[in-house]
Image (cartoon, rainbow, N blue to C red; front, side, top):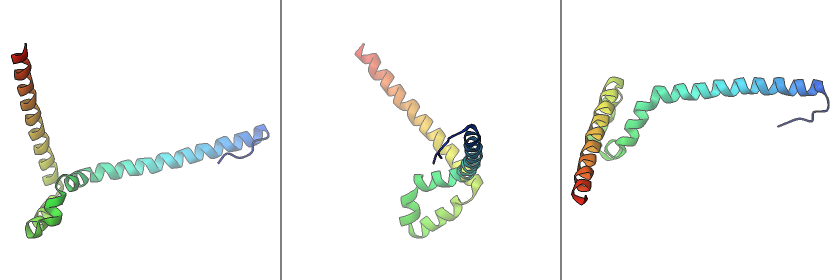
Length: 103
């Protein structure tokens, strides 16, 4: 909260306080960004395959164990990206064919 500023000295003190607070917030934001970068793939996998892991019984347990491997998670994410690219290409091809027939 802003304090009462009555003179130049109190203004300088408030500026200093706000600069210190800015540095604290930057460090906090950097920490949260690092956490997100470190855990992105596991968060992606948990949002991508939640029902298989939660309701899959033994298969879900095995899948959860396997997906804890960072290298495998990266490979699955790359595969998913390629699959989505192929699907997008297919949809674009179909749309182009439909648009071609209309003209």
